[in-house]
Image (cartoon, rainbow, N blue to C red; front, side, top):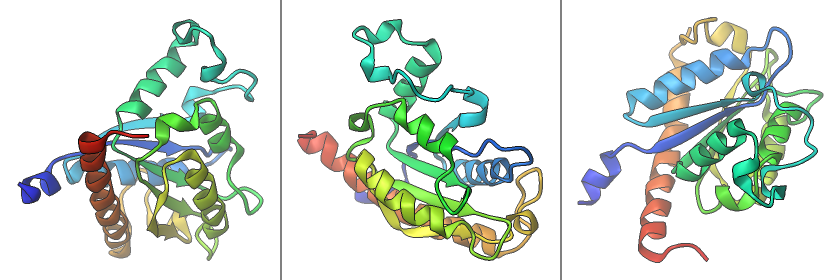
Length: 201
């Protein structure tokens, strides 16, 4: 029974928060979506650029009747609530978390992310692979209730590692993604089993 559970697909929401011109993040997102689907997972994609949310003034949970909130926010909330795990793809803007990513998360209450794991995928065109933003994301995601797994998939020189179509250009890409996803899958199944058995506080 445990073996069957470990092999079953998960519902995963992948977030992309980089919005600036010429962004590399869409390559990384497409690559990770492909890796998740190859493992049999169902993937929903929330892209800050495509959603085009204004700077936050009224989050979803400030609506007394959430059915009156914009339809896009209601649909995104439903995807977040239904998910078993999250993958966050992040660039590094001024050595920090991209504002589009924080703005996207801030539209929703932290409670809907709670008791589910997250995985951080960071990148940059330089040699550090976005790790400074990843260190900040650890704290950010922990406060949202979706603590990140210990492995971080960092991609230095991302423009040389992944094609514009999201295809890996070296053998390290699939290995790196595999290590992250192995941890994320284990934690997601463990936490899902516990939620199903014990509920949440």
